[in-house]
Length: 231
Image 1 (cartoon, helix red, strand yellow):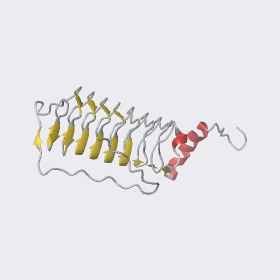
Image 2 (cartoon, one colour):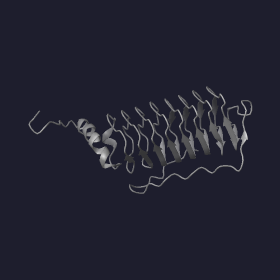
Image 3 (cartoon, one colour):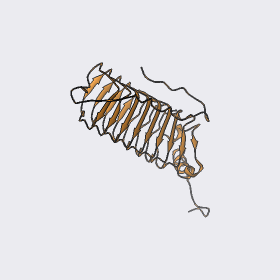
Image 4 (cartoon, helix red, strand yellow):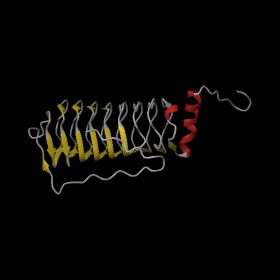
């Protein structure tokens, strides 16, 4: 099941609900952590495991913790992550379609080139992560916080970001064409050279971020900016 946006209006954004940790975790091994079709993992700790390049349809992870584990290049279809924690994990070039996260926190995770397509994120916190060149096309965001992340050239085309907040993030060259941003919040972010700036109707931008954004918006509208003396 894909988590759909609650489509809260501007000013109604709420902080993500924290993941619910289990009373205890069992450490997974490479054998017990075999990521395969329809596999279900509950209350497992994935610590320092190499699970790169795995492929699975319909895998579910509940109350799991990932630390120092390599999932780079994995391919997931219809995956579900519920009440999970990711720390210092490698998700670079992971491809997930029609997948969801619910009450998940990702911290200091490498997510360069992640492709999370046509999915859903609800009550998710992403902090101090590298998400450059990531793609979130057609994905819905509800109560999602990006904090201190590198999102340069990230692709949010056709995404519903009405329930997302970006704080202290670098969004240089990010693409927002045909995205829904009514209610999306930006604070202390780098917004230089973003694409699809005309899709930002209804977004809430901190005043200190507006100057750089205004030049991008002017360029998109064909407005020529010059000094008072005409130069």
